[in-house]
Length: 270
Image (cartoon, rainbow, N blue to C red):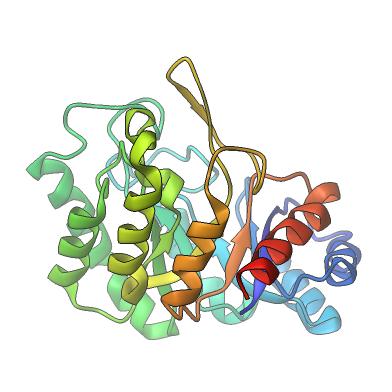
């Protein structure tokens, strides 16, 4: 499998050096996030760094909110998302990651209407409007689900994808995102079932961890929380997923340590 990491890129300068350091650490790909958006100039710089170092652009981040399309909570409105999709030919990637959306002020804030028919329709219509450009450039839209958003669990994810029945739509397999704090006592069984059900629809795998304190949840890097990584990665390996794995929520200068943890778990599973 390809193992990469999530990095934030704001400007063209220094990208090749950053990619070279990641290559030396053992990574083969990245998910590139653009907190200030992506211009053609930045897209060309990323593509050049990828060619020079051999680090593949496994995905780019277009984290928009389909329920509040004009907001840019992570640097991307829905209009910006469309522009980013059109840049994927220049960047040389075939995956753009996005949220399903939420009505609250914060993307992760619970809201009583997030799972309503109106929210479902807003997401459906928004994605329907992007399908022509996805088909035109041959790019896939990869939804990162979350338990407080529209795509809040496996049933809703699969029902939504089935409604489109399009090879251009898939999901990020990220079990911590779909488990609320009060559900963690049964996490191991839940994660194994989740991986089995979502594996055929998975376009990308995210690797992070979970910490819970007094009902509050945080997401550190792999091996820094309570996630049963042998069970999780064992289920992913058993599912024969071919999608790239992306380590996230780790500072760039500690990405190598996170990679060593993941590889150690894999060796123990062999």
